[in-house]
Image (tube, rainbow, N blue to C red):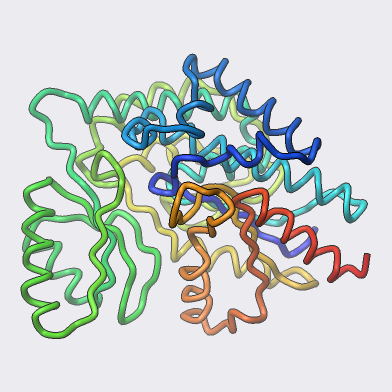
Amino acid sequence: MKPNAIIAPGQSAQYVGMGSDLVSSKNQVINDITGKIYQKANEILGFDLMGICFNGPKESLDKTLVTQPAVLVHSIACYEVFKALYKQSLGEEFDFAVAAGASLGEYFALYSAGVLDYERVLSIVQKRAIAMTEVINQPGYDAGRQLLLNVEAATLDDVCAQFGLEQSNCNIGGKRSATVVGGAVKDVDAAIEYLHATLKGAGVSLMVIPLPTEAAFHTSLMTPARRKFAPVVSSYEFLPFQRNVVSNCTGQLYAQDGSDIRINLIHQIDSPVRWLYGMRTIMKELSQLEGNQAIFEFGGGKPTETNPANQRGNFGGTTRKNLTEMGINPKVISLYDCVSERTILETIDKLRQDAGR
């Protein structure tokens, strides 16, 4: 087993045009693989996911019912293309030791580890999105919104306490943490106004980014969705783990016998994503293996425009900061974006050169 980890993003990584470069590729291998993946997705979901991903409108793509399968399918398409080209170029199967994904991305990790096949993983994610959407659209219910902040831990705690917000995703710890918080719309708006008035006015470099999600995911506002989703998870059969997977709920590895998979997936909906803890688990696993350590990110993007060729991975900067905080020099860990045809081909070329082939 090689000291490779694979990771995938969740909601907020979507952009209009995602996957279009893969399906329209002049490379027949890429074209064949992704065409089948997206056509199958349309059949399973019962709507034209491919059309919305490629052409929008953005308002439709940002709807939870579409976003969740869209990001998952894109991650799987990038992964399957990468694996095929890796074998074609390097003459061996791509192997990894541990997989993880942020929120929705955890389902990609379970797919890659053989726990859920393509049809099952897409089906369960669609039902997850339905459960959340039913809560979001409930008349009179404030499902909230989310913010990405980079304030100090003490300030973060004060803001959450003062405005009734909850930490839903801890990406980076330390003095200037990068954390997602969520809460009722009016409370989030009040917190934004407070942060700009008190911190920006004091000359603090402040990052306050509203996320393109429909609700305050991974907070108690999603508890009704968790209750709706629980019987769905209980009805699915999960296959044995072929590789280790990190749980968002615990930041630790799933039990190899799968005994905790249902409870973790159920509670993941209204529990914080412990990404920072998961990264520590990943590095612990990789450090026990011989060879050059690498982390590959599949799917989604940080768009500057709708052209997939201009995308980059969501976790590059975050991962480097995670490693630094753990006392690991980021330069000794290879980080690869596999989020488009361009980045996948660049990664394959780099790996081939490193292998002297």
